[in-house]
Image (cartoon, rainbow, N blue to C red; front, side, top):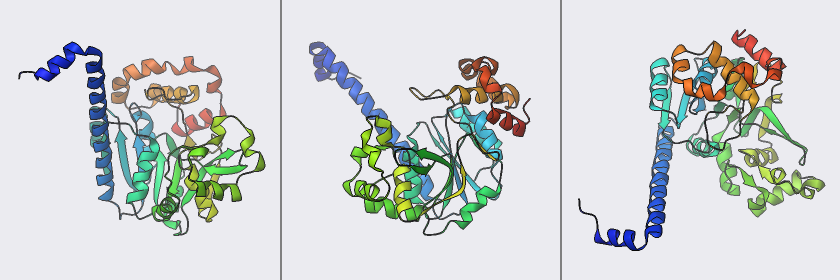
Length: 332
C-alpha cells in the first residue's frame, strides 16, 4: 500500500513532530484497548449480578503459586470468581484446566484495584466477598459471614489499619465483605468512589462530614502528604461508618492472626510497584517447596529475580508470622 503524500511530507519536514504524534497515537490506541478490556470485565460481572455467595479474587502475573493456596482455602459452597489481569495466556489456560470455577474473567491489562472494586459495587446487588490472592483464610466459617450482612451495613472487615491522625481504625482490603446496594447509595450521594484520593481533592460536603465527626484537631498540622491521602475504599469506609454501616467481624492487625494470613508486598513484576523482603521471602519459599512442578518450571525467570529464600533475609526465617504460616502449609 502506498503511503500518504501528507505523511511523507510530515515525516520529512517535521521528523520530531511526526515521532511525537506517532507515540501519542500509540498511547491512545493502548488506552482504548485497555478500556475495552475493562468494559468486558463489567459485562461479565453483569451476567452474574443477582447471584449470592460470590467471592472475587484478582490474580496478577507470576502469582499462581500463591493464589493456588488461597483458592484451596475457599469453601466449595462459595461461588468463586477469578479476575485474571495482566497474566500470560498460559497462566489463564492453566487455571481453566486445573479448577472448576464459578467464573473466570481474563484481561491482558492490569488495572488499579479500585477500578475493579467500583465495577463490582456498581453492578452487583447482593453482598459479596473480596479477597486478595495472597490472603489465606484457614477458618472457612469466615466466608459464611457474607450471608449475615445486613441491608444497613456497607463494609464488614477482618483486618484494620490505624490512622493515627484520625485516631481511627479502617478496614483493609485484604479480606472484606461489601454490600453493593448500601455502597451505591453512599457513592451517589457524595459523588465519591473507592479509589485513592488526597484530602484536598474530596468534595466539600465529604470534607465537612469527616471534619465534623471524625477529624481531630491536629490532623492539619502535618506536612507529610501520606497523612492526607486516603487509600483504596477508605473514604467509603468512613462515610459508611458515619451511617453506622461498618462492622469488624474480627479485628486483626497485619501478621497477628492465626487463622487468616495475608502476605502482602510480593514482587509480581509490576513496574514501579512497592514490594517487601517479607513478601518475596515467602513467595520464594513456596516456589522452592510446595508449588506445582509445572509452575516452578514456568516461573523459572521470575524465581531467579526473587532469588533463593535463604538469601533474601535471614531475620525473616525466624519471624513468628512465617513460622506459623509454614506450619499451616506443612513447609519445613
